[in-house]
Length: 178
Image (cartoon, rainbow, N blue to C red; front, side):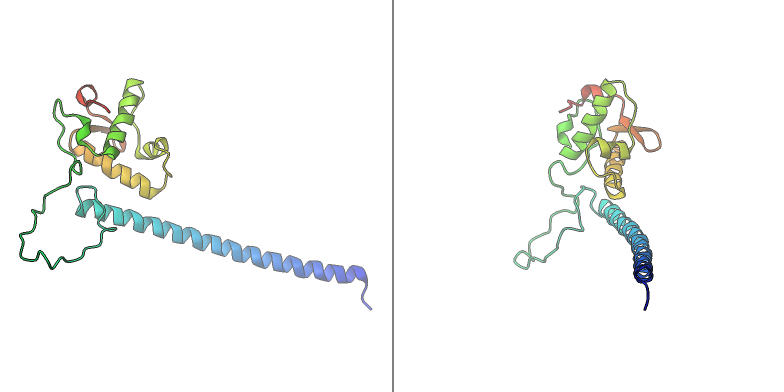
């Protein structure tokens, strides 16, 4: 007849083997999850980039369902460059108020204006996301980068160093802020 201590050791050994097996499985699943999350984030970024190219008005084409309207089939279609109010970023010029921009762009300008007023330096898009209280994930950072690059291209922002944004000269004084 086996001893009580011997039986306890057998049960302990079986439990240890089970724990080790479960840990190995958990590590494998964790690694697989990390790879899947990276792949998912890359697809989100790719979709947003395509959205930015296909919809220069910052509208999302991925969330829009296109349904043909047979009632107005004979009516002329609106011009392709017709835009919604405040959906495009106009070229900056002296005296142009920030109110011509959408709220997202105004928030970027206001934050950079505040930093300029406090004699603080330019910001990266990751830093902007953190200041806005967003999750600092590639999808959010890329969305901000797209907006910041659009503001640079239209003369509202300056990018002195790659990836570091500040207000363009003249925008702070005449923009009209909020």
